[in-house]
Image: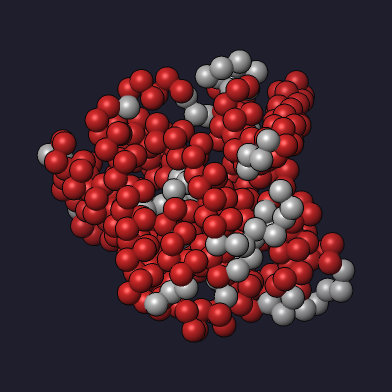
Amino acid sequence: MPAIEMYELLSVGLVILLGILGGKLSHRYKIPRVTGYMLTGLLFGPSVLGLISSSTLESIHMINDIALGLILFTIGGEIDLHKLRTSARKMISVTLAESSGSMILVFLAVWAITQDVGLALLLGGVSIATAPGVTLLVTREYRARGPLTESLLAVVALNNVLCLLGFRLFFAFYSMTEGTELITIVATLGKELIGAAVFGLAIGAMITYWEQKIDDLSELLLVIIGGILAGIGLAKTMGISYMIVCLVIGAVTNNLSAVHRLIHAELRQTEMPFYIAFFVLSGASLHIDSLAHLGIIGAAYMIVRPIGKYIGARWSCSKLGVETSVKENLGMALLPQAGVAIGMVIAVSETHPELGAVMSTVILSSVIVYEGIGPFLTRLSLKRAGEIHLQE
């Protein structure tokens, strides 16, 4: 037992140290650090050198859960109801438009190729998701601020909520066509959605109440981390989405807390090691050989998804009179896709292995491409909008 614990700690330490070196090297060559983290993981992962083995990835998978929980908490913290009062309709409309654009085009493309409505519907649902972690780290690295940055973070947050909810509905419909009783589907959906909202609201309210009773920011930091970990643990215990729980916690604390800016400032002191480990492990989990099995379905998915997001975002921004910098650049910044999409595929694989295998090949192959190109396009979008405030 002690040897296993030491090995896991050694693995985590090496992952973080290698990630830091990869990030520094990539930044030197004007490559986004997040790309450097993932390339480091890919280089040292099972697909290339094998220093990070498949068994290592499995043994320290908890790091991914914690990091993704922190990322969703931070993204949720970008949902400011006071600001959204004037722009909520616009941001929701833009999100619905770009999500519908990718979903409809992916559905039509996959259905035309396979004639399988279920597969087309599920891949269309997955296509909605945008990687929150990549977006967050790129905006932070370049100290981006302005209308595009605010819109991008808000749309990504809403985007993933829509994906998590929409995909569950699509999957429920698919299960119903496979013979699952309607009452079972409704009960499962109710437990997942209502449970996630209740847990998120309760933990967010607890953090907000606790902060009023303490004067030490270090204690506040412990309360936040403890609350997020409790939320992840409760969600996994109850079989509901911890991503929605953490997103709700972030939104609640941001809107109810009197010192929400201090909360997120304090959290930044401790979250970076988890983020680095998350992206290194994400890179290590990518298998280059899956590109060889991509096929026409995967190629179609990779092509039509970004087209749908770009057209949907630009069209809606034009109709709603959104700032030119947002209209011209938002769609380009929505390409990255990873954690949430992969989570959806895993959920399918647990109950429908054959369907999950097809979806896994398509999504994991596309993630390799999207995560390679996505950070560059996000950075380019921010630069074109004049919102990068870091000397390059």
